Amino acid sequence: MGASLKDVAHHAGVSIRTVSNVVNDFPLVAPATRERVQRSIDELQYRPNAAARTLRGGRSGLIGLVVPELASPYFSELAALVTEAAERHSWTVLVEQSGGDPERERRLLDGGRAPGGQSVDGLLLSPWSLTPADVRSRPTTGPPVVLLGEQDADGLFDHVAIDNVTAAAAATHHLLATGRRRIAAIGLQPHLANGTAEQRHRGYRTALAEAGIRPDPALELEVAHLHRPDGAAALRRLVEETRRFDALFCFTDQLALGAMRALYQLGARVPEDVAVAGFDDIEDGRFATPSLTTIAPDKTAIAEAALHCLAARLTASDGTAVPAPARSVVIPHQLVVRESTASRIHR
Image 1 (cartoon, rainbow, N blue to C red):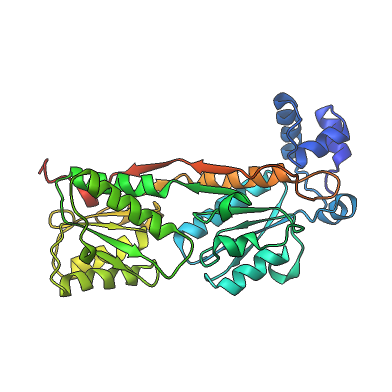
Image 2: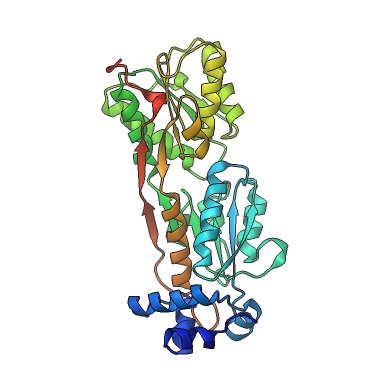
């Protein structure tokens, strides 16, 4: 038999109600008391009984996480961080990939259920294809939803994201500071409604304008997907069309890694001939040769903020959403400079 709430309460010297409040992450617990109870939970290896919680409080102890692609290093890293953070809330995470399919995203959003039909206490959703109008049409009676990424549904749901415009401008300013002036952008996706590529494109153009450089549409390349082959194909299109460029700002690290491979195959040197910057700070970029300069979102903070928003929406009695204005949480990012953008000025 595992430890019970009563066991934890006795070990921590508090009431069973206090332990329940800590387990369910309710805010009205003194920090010192919360810490003491959490130590007892950890030492006794207490795990909530999901079935009992459902019967008593209308909770399943399950939350859903819907991401576009599990094969994407960014989303797989984020899913792992959400799972780790959810353990501290005594939640189990059920992960589903939408493939960016609008009907699948809508079905998962509307149903309030995770893969397999299980009811969930809340849903974290990173939509690719749903428009703000699609998200706003979701029934209000379902479990609380937290949106991840650029789609914010005009303030209807809690929303956690980074400032993509500022981040993309920082990457482009960095390339300009190394002496580059013909900077190509790889990653435009006008066929998607999520706004990510549009915001990164805007940041790129903002930085060029601030440097007095007129954007060249011939150096702005669309891609079907954000994967390595798409980055390589886009780079080859630039070369085949004899576009003159001395730097690349790629909207994801995967695109950047594909482009760097194509440059290597064409005999071009990175960064001597072409500087390359990416976005996402995936592990592959840290171990590439040369290592990849990138924008690093604080993925741990994204996971923790999303779960904090979800916890704040849940009540102890029936698991329904707490009425309150939707939150918009902007997560920090940083420019991580590595070998792929070594400055010409210092060579």
